[in-house]
Amino acid sequence: MTIVFGLAAALLWGIPDIPLAVAVRRVGEIPVLVWSLAIGLVASAPLMLVAGTPHVSGRGLLIAATAGAVTVAAYLTAFTSFQTCPVSIVTPILSCEGAVAAVIAVAFGERPSTKLGVLLAIAVFGVILVGVTGGDEGRSRMRGILFVSLAAIIWGVVLALETPVTDELGVWWGFLLVRAFTFVFAVVFALGRRSRTRLVPSLRAEPWRIAVWGISDAGAYASFYIAAHNGPLALASVLAAQFAVFGSIAAVVILGERLRRRQWLGVVIVVAAVSGIASLGY
Image (cartoon, rainbow, N blue to C red; front, side, top):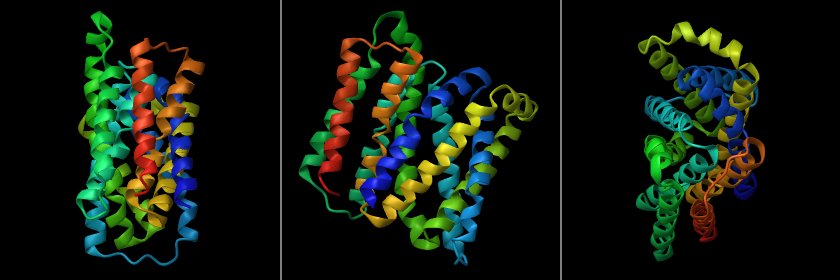
């Protein structure tokens, strides 16, 4: 169950990165975030029919609200990186979120392994190779690389928060409440940035790309919740992080992106390291 749904999350997060990146570059990260969350929330609403009676506690709501706030930060930093970086660079760096979540899981009691530190160091080395392009191109992309590196850390925290959320609220209500809080915080952020006048025109400009990402993202998130609930969080996290494979390949095939040899080597190293962490059996 954990392996199947973990890989399903990777697929649903990986390939739709292409329409996501195009939409962000055309209309900006804030409108894409708000509308994709709204569409995903509507698509997820039928789950309330099978979720049963919610057992909501003050502690559960606080954790879900915290997860929602952190998730907004994770989305915005990741989306911003698409403005200056190719998808084939963003996805392997972002995939380190699974390794971050694995470290957090180990820190809070999951069985540690001496191999984990070595594999994490290898993953970091791969990220460096992916990010180093040299020349003016490298300098222009540095902001995006810094943003996606920060996003990977924040997303690791988001993934790690899944366990306390589902422990308090259950799988389905935990998923739905976190998504609802995330949407509310995203709307508040958009209003605070005075982006409300851009929301409707942005949806009209990129309706299908935003819808594809919103529905796929919600499906990926739900798949991850199921995977993490049925197996170790660290294993579910690193499996879901395999979206780097799907995202990088799709970017090269569909968008025609090109990477230098050392960058391809970095992609391979990151994917191999993340796969190695999954094989440790956490």
